[in-house]
Length: 433
Ligand code: UGA
Image (cartoon, rainbow, N blue to C red; front, side):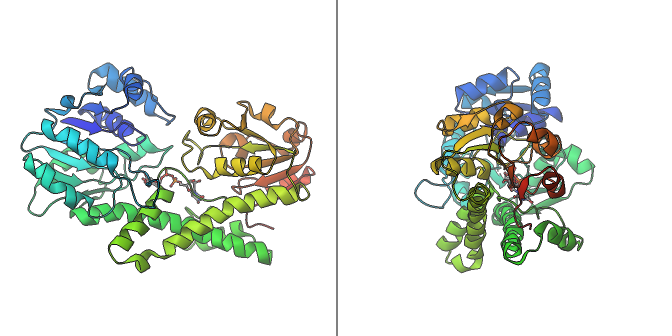
């Protein structure tokens, strides 16, 4: 099928390449000529495992093209809208500028019978308000939220755990989406057809639930800290209850990224507009617990160094908001580095993929590519992104030969405290004795 994908960021670029890899003819459209130039040459403009391969293959096959020219959307049967919906600068609400601009630019190129499928995360009610514009072109608007995780985006797109499509009453657009996703559906992937509002809400509800789960375990970490309990064992124990489940019970410096933080804030803002602010008032607590954990990690470094970080060399392991990503949007890792720098520490940041992005936003920090060079002479070490090179391939005995001090703060509870203490380190975890 001929498809267009409007917006070629973390979501759209992967969607376009993944749809081409399952056999569709896809044009990816974006206003950023640099991004389009890279993609058109089969190069991924950001780090995402597996993307370079399907991108290169799609471009070489001729089934995958990229352009800045919206006219190229003409002739596609389904137009996926995958532009960003960041947090507004002066409020918690979602900024729909890019969604509106994409729809306006697409409208003149729509033909009767076309389907416009929104993938961006939007406040509930957005699809209903966009519908008259799409219908004026004889096209149908559906909402098809995306649940991919960065770092696993290719796999999550090609082989999702569920597909959700919100359609207007009386429409048969779901049949076309079934055709688009036929390989996944053939593997019995649940395909849920619902109305527009439910589809929009499914997405924000899923992210709100995940954020709540993380903040729940971080709240338990705060209690563990004043009682001498160990939150990692607690998570293990409650996780065996399959109604609870062990996933997303990783206590640490909390969630970040381009999705969970802004999505829970936008959800609260939308609920307020709907007169139902109290229904999701707990999301404000979820946000606050989350932000407190970053400060906790900083405090642990301060106390590990005897009360002050001023003039001390602190090596921060990780800048990305999570491993397998170069994304530093609302990164708790980078935030702790910036806070320590603000307190006068000599901060050295290392990360396998995210340094370039981090340097652009926080040029005041010192960045070192090589982990061991970054560790040399450190008086304290702070692990904030659990890349394998810090979690699995960084023996305490080896690090002891590089650093000046032996203080380690494990912001992701990724290390074995016994190993580090055994090597003579003062080990501080999050919610662990
Ligand atoms: C999240 C959702 O998981 C996806 O389903 C969704 O599609 C996506 O947002 C989106 O809306 O586009 P993502 O932002 O890629 O995906 O990252 P997650 O894997 O959810 O991790 C989010 C943050 O939570 C990271 O900072 C991670 O370090 C943190 N986290 C995760 C914890 O602190 N503890 C955990 O146990 C798990």
